[in-house]
Image (tube, rainbow, N blue to C red; front, side, top):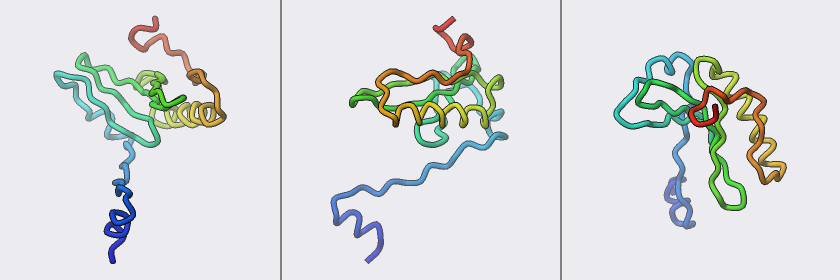
Length: 114
């Protein structure tokens, strides 16, 4: 019996593995009519907006409610920096803190926080 069949038989869903963003791919993400997201891993994603800005965010849940933390703007914050900030924020969330963690990077460049 295949692994997928055994998972389906157990009432579980098979999850497809996420493919992480590569640093060279980010330049190639072009703006569209609507904002779109490119997932990296474990809640980290890059949002590409119609005006061409590319912003890093971390999605997580606290008490069943979805939260979103802005980490910074690309290219000011590269992929490695975003992953570092994401890891630090993720540890704060996993420690049980109820508020959005402070990633330690200035967020004044993110729309709506200036």
